[in-house]
Image (tube, rainbow, N blue to C red):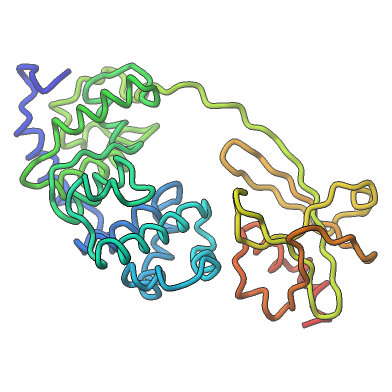
Length: 341
């Protein structure tokens, strides 16, 4: 279906969606502001992180970094430590790069047009559309997983939404639909619809405000996506080595996933693998399912590049990925560290 179809009244569609959102829209702190910095922070936090997790961190972050200048002024290690627990740390590096560009090139003020936003590092079509609509109420399209699901079902669109053709269609469709007078509410509404009535597995079509405009015959089968890559299982073997009141840690080098963050040193040598592990963890990272073993070693290991001894009372202030922080705070490792506290 397109907006040229006789029974698809685009104005009625917009009005139905916006009116529903005014009644049913959920209250989030980033919806109470039009400050582009606050909105940018929320958008980057919400990428690949659940809303409940972000709600627990957003206000604290904004108190620490209320403006781009505040984040631009700190070193990367401080930024990483403050982001800890949200994961996907490239986001905070991108956020800090944007903050510095805003301060150094734009006098601390965000550009209010697509051309200016494109000059900011890491700002793609989605983030640009979010800033333009949520901060400046400009009619810019946004397409995330929720919007893609709503549009695919409304139009009964069966091309994979993660294909080049599918993405081109969805962005064009979103651009044609966005309400030029109420862009902020419209984009919030269509995202909210995908999170609630038009959910992935159990769409509640009876409560959907745009049901009269929907062409989906079997909404639970849409959107179509390309097959996901198979999960790859990997094992990591790390060591806990204590010297005096210090613990051996490794700082991840540039270019690695957790660049600039500290972790337990990794070892795959025969001696380490022969030792019983004191802690086992399992967690997922994108398409990887990781099983991690931490071995307590008492023989002095050969230090590798990037490894250093860190006093236990200083570790709290260092940025660490969540699995390492959880390991450090676990009762098992806690018992081993108690005698040096």
